[in-house]
Image 1 (tube, rainbow, N blue to C red):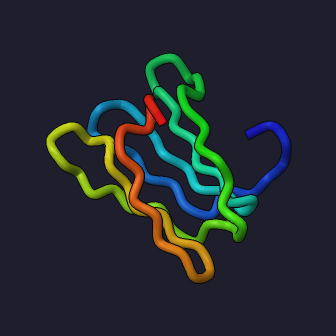
Image 2: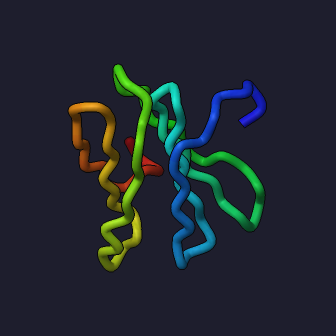
Length: 79
């Protein structure tokens, strides 16, 4: 990110994508082939402490953790 918000967790996926969780609570998905952000999800009320890939057959489901919240995200390109 170019706005200076610190990454708190990064997960590289086998399909040439990276998911990052940030101190402001946002989650972003990048395509490593193009170097572009392809999706940004709304920030949680607390910064993220972890992003974990569930690795289903579509490689697009994740769990994020903040101070007292767990969220399950599915298909980051379409949410």
